[in-house]
Length: 463
Ligand code: SF4
Image 1 (tube, rainbow, N blue to C red):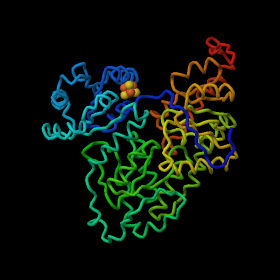
Image 2 (cartoon, rainbow, N blue to C red):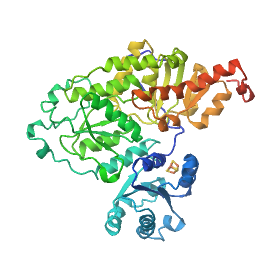
Image 3 (cartoon, rainbow, N blue to C red):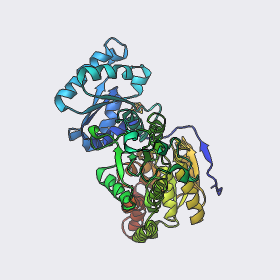
Image 4 (cartoon, rainbow, N blue to C red):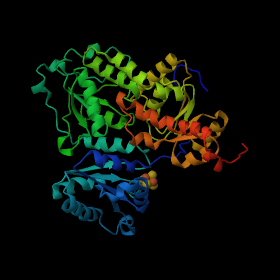
């Protein structure tokens, strides 16, 4: 285990399990109420979606597959004609405000020109068509949302800063990503900019309103969300608009917002856990030149309410195999809870976008006197399992492929995918996050008292 103060990054083979990024349709179609998602690809994707999304598929979801056949792949059929036929049906049946095409590995490999066809059909059908290349070749799991949001960014209306902001000098041109820098210089016009805060990242509406409330408590009001509840309510973007991410996997969206829409990024840690939420709000306050009010007391109160969970996990060790990009924020939160994190696997690490989070991780390790976890980008699951055999962590956060085999070898596991779908953002949801983490550990203590079902599947292995 490393005991370095500065995080070091390792990179392995990328031979790991994760969900295909097209799975983002599962939560995005629910978030954007007037959207329809069309996944363009072969049957493999259909099977994956049907299996991964479980019972949701029986609830007439607003997504479908445009299944490519032999004729599409050998170009005997005309891509545009085929897509037109399907989109017309979608329009007649559901009348959505937007159709989002999700490109897959198939469309990449056969070079289907989705971006070229979309504007033509858009004109013909009179419905906006957004193209997101959420394929498994380039991306992992949650990055699917990143590609969809980055594509949607271009459809947001233009923010007219001249009419809202009298002084042109107030508009800050450079980008705030350096968390340690003094941001005072940015904000001569801070007060007048106060309402131009757009948060990006898809959260369930109850969690989004909690975040709105948290920032309103500090007299910073959120002017919009990307994505919004409805496609027709996308927030205005442009010079003078500050944007802040709520999820660590949205680096492409952040880059597009800065480069293409000229927004200013507030580089903050992510609002996961009471510590992350406080740091997140504090950074926003700093940018808007607002003095944070009562944040420390509020955080302490929440930690006090979590004491029953903390008793279970303090001093326990955890190994996170990595598949959804939430790993760094989660590790930082768990270290703050008193756990030792041996390793954090992560599919892709944007050090610039996650700079503030990495810094907070570093501070948290110092504060809690815990070693800095080893951060492994593009992990190799085979090597990770070997390392786990040596380290024998109390808990492994892992995908479904490894969960049962590890359980059978006496390592408790938590399915990582649950952190993506559960509500873990904001201070108020810290209990839910810890409920997930502690469940396997509590199950173990229950089985010590009563029946130990795990012995049924336990095997002896010589390593
Ligand atoms: S795009 Fe790649 S990862 Fe996704 S379902 Fe197809 S083959 Fe699998």
